[in-house]
Image (cartoon, rainbow, N blue to C red; front, side, top):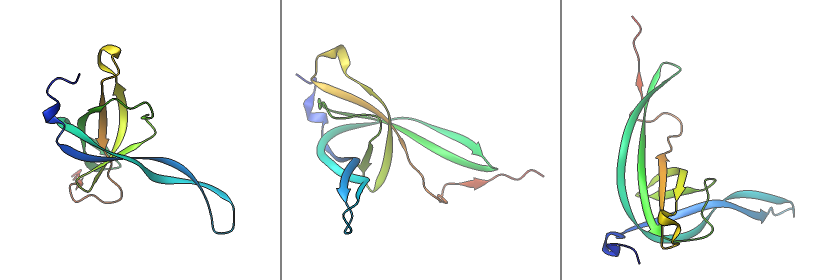
Length: 120
């Protein structure tokens, strides 16, 4: 049994690669919703990374959910209009009661938090 299951009070959506057919009949793979579930959300850390003279902030979060077999690191989590890329999954004590998912916030394009560094 999950210790303090009342903390699973945030609704998240888990997305993964789903096979589908195009209107012309070709097979394709695209991202699709696999499930919605309740989770506890814990911020872990924020890092600043310099890439091509742009300083980006990476937000790392831990999501705790009830155990599911089909979760892997090729999936993403959508929570509060943000997308998180799964980087690690832990099954505590291997008792198949819960999963602790470590994920990083995905930023696409120019993020309003990006800062251009001055070199002069």
